[in-house]
Every structure is written in structure tokens, then in C-alpha cells.
Image (tube, rainbow, N blue to C red; front, side, top):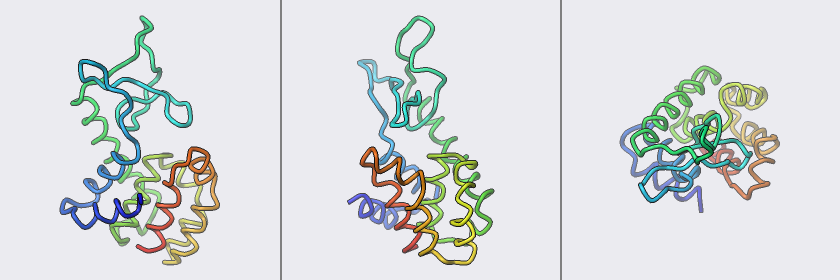
Amino acid sequence: MGLEILNKALEQNQRGLKEFLKKDLRFREGTGEIDENGRFLAYFDSEGKPTIGIGSRTDSVFDIAGNKKSASFEEVESDFDLNTQEAIAGARRVIPTFDSLSLNRQMALANMVFQMGPSGISTFKEMIKAIAKSNFQLAAKEILNSKFARQMAKTSNPRAKDMAELIRKG
């Protein structure tokens, strides 16, 4: 089901990778809880890390007074915009052939960078080599045989399977 939503978003998208990635991340990440004033409350993500808005890490869920931290819609959107730009830039740094890949493959790789950072995706040495050789079957297999995929499976999150499928099919 998630892959169908991604493909439909791709068909409707006219604004390029950044907008496509933002649609996908909104779908996957969610935003956590919103208080009565419409502010986004901090929460612990699936790895137990303090997060606010759409996947933005914070130092703590609580402020000095012990209240849950919160952010306005504008703050969340600004952070999210910056985080997606950084994910795309990080994918470009780590994957030498990034700009020559299909939009689906770029989105999958930028999504992985958003999730684990450039240093995290750079540990996928065999995947990166396979992508450089246009061996997308092997690249997808490397995603599925990773710690990333095992962590996603623990939370019933189809992200790794979806990313592997996007890499494989292009």
C-alpha cells in the first residue's frame, strides 16, 4: 500500500525531488501529538530518540521546567524544509551517481539519508558500489539485508522494503 501512495505522489509531483521527498516523509514520519494551541509536541521516535515535528531531533522532550517542548507550525515547516535539503545534499555527497538516477531512486536514497544521516548511508558500501554499476537488484538486496531493514521490521515499518523496491524498479 505504501508503495502505491509513493507512485501516485510521483505521478502528481511537478516540483521535483524535494517536494516528492517531503510528501513521502510526511506520510512516513507523521508529526506526533499536537496540543490545544496547535503546537507540535516533542515525542520519542521509534528508536527512543527525542524528536519534534516531522523527524527533527531535539536534545530533550522536556524543557527545563519539565513541560513537553513544542514548536509552531512555522518552526516545524522550516526545520522540515532544511532537513529535506540536507538529506538531498547528503545523498549527493555519498552517492557519486546520484544526479543521474531516476527520481524514484533519488527519493529512496534521500529518504534513507533523512532517516540515518550521510554517515549512516555511507556504511552501505556494497549498495553504493552496486548503484555505481547500475546493479539495482543487488543494491536493493543490500538494503534488505541491513540493520536499517531489521530496525524497520521491528516496528512494522515498511520503509526499508519500499526503499529497496524503489531502488530496484527505478
